[in-house]
Length: 333
Ligand SMILES: NC(=O)c1ccc[n+]([C@@H]2O[C@H](COP(=O)([O-])OP(=O)(O)OC[C@H]3O[C@@H](n4cnc5c(N)ncnc54)[C@H](OP(=O)(O)O)[C@@H]3O)[C@@H](O)[C@H]2O)c1
Image (cartoon, rainbow, N blue to C red; front, side, top):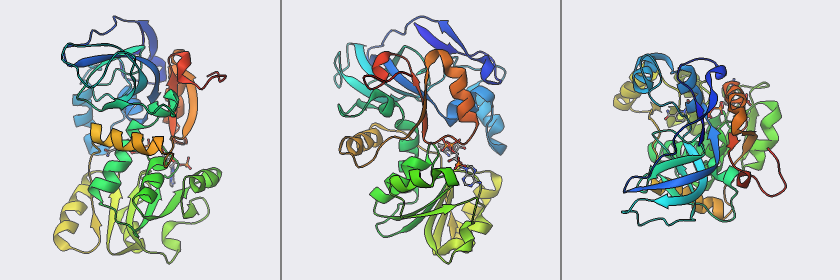
């Protein structure tokens, strides 16, 4: 099968399309023919070895100290089950699925994953490209908003980086949880975030968040552009600052503010689960949330997909099309 392969860290030029053996599903695994996958910020960090701040060494140790341990990147996939191990009960051949592979390997024509990993049936009304654009940002936003911050109906929530891979889901899911949402974005994305349901928009090229008199219950920063000192000025007395990118300073602030009470910093690493994907798939199916696709690239041009992600100004997700079924009929990548 074809796969996007890399065996050294570096620029997007390290990626090449190679013929590699097709994986064989183990007893508890399904083999999925991948129609659509993605390049997300985690793939870029792995390929370029761009692990943030104090996590560089830990990230590098996990990815491979001297060279990558996993040669095929990609965590998000959507496709069709073509084989299954003898113990598999949740899926059968022909099922249309979407999933998230913690072990990467999705930037390829086939992937084998455990039926107990985050993989669910794809709603028929959702395209494969949209399905592949969902798990990374959708699960992360859900983890930060629902599980870490425990957003309550009526909360005023500010989301910085509202048009990015995580932000587009955070805007929609915060609304879904009953919050009043203020989205921070640049001029060209104002209409996009409004269309996702943002109640208010701050264009960061024109104003900063502390300029208004508004006070928030939660500030979720996906862009790494706000610190606790700035956030404090815009938070309510018991408000939460949740920086998605964090370092030693934020870890210390999280510990200290928990003891001190009042305005708090919460940090966490997003999780993934079948429950989360099921929740997201249900909302996609009912049309309450939708994927935002920045661009499509065929597998052969995956290096360009990485370059787009590395710009840090994509809108939603960068989708990689592996088979013609990835796209709605009549659309070419
Ligand atoms: N801790 C965890 O578990 C976890 C999980 C998932 C992701 N992450 C991290 O979360 C971060 C965001 O990921 P992503 O996929 O959403 O990234 P992304 O798609 O590259 O989005 C970056 C966003 O930042 C915005 N931005 C750039 N400069 C800004 C500024 N000065 N003020 C406000 N917004 C600005 C961009 O908007 P414009 O184009 O409008 O400028 C864009 O929407 C990454 O660092 C990723 O590694 C962490």
